[in-house]
Length: 112
Image (cartoon, rainbow, N blue to C red; front, side, top):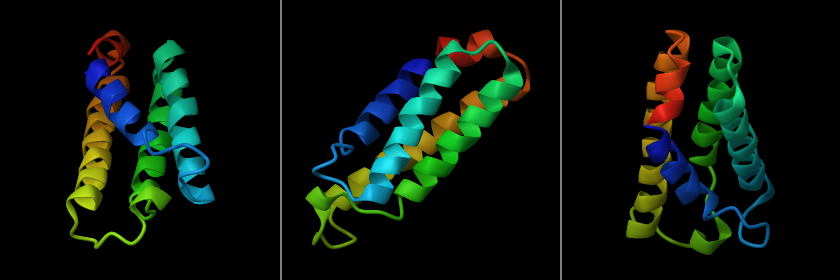
């Protein structure tokens, strides 16, 4: 699970360079990165749940933005669909890990 979460975050961060993204999207990517660090380090279920909530919100918000690299692409283009699919997969993985955190199964949440 953790490997999938990291892979999805990596996909999202692929679009996170300052020269490529709008400020709001860059902020969402920073939020994902910062809270992933919390998730990986914490031994507190509530702290993990809170960080995952922030990650979910940032990923959801990122779906409302388009990286500059993809500006001008039609909404139904393969690149835009891939971008949204990556964020949807990240959100789904966050939800899985969050359920484990809420059940105080932090080792399983971190293991993957």
